Length: 151
Ligand code: DQA
Image (cartoon, rainbow, N blue to C red; front, side, top):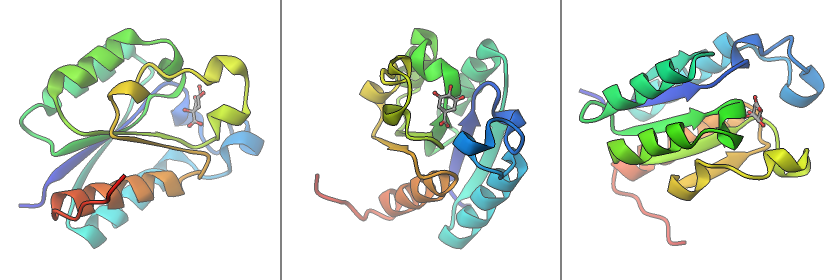
């Protein structure tokens, strides 16, 4: 059986495609889900894709990943900058976490420069649009095959 990677998306990402396209592009969340599914297929990963606008629901999905998933790729969206609870949930399940953002948060408003998640993440990808999801999944595939990159 292929290792399972959980791809999680936080609030407002369900609006992708129509939401501030100059910042987030024209792809919809369904397009990104499909990209993740295809990337997983190509690299021997099973991918579970989930989006919610409810913080507690995201936390419960993170808890349920323990012992079931090999890693979590997460775009916490606005909760990146506000949620100690999501960071604590991710730390609690002791799985490798890759944080991804469509936009380059460091080039935007100052309140987007701090992430509660980054300190517990294996790595962070920002500003590469949906390609960031693909690259994050490819990194998990390499990691699971035992291919290591020196820092
Ligand atoms: C985002 C960046 C966040 O600052 C913002 O709140 C989002 C999306 C991104 O993917 O670029 O909703 O995570």
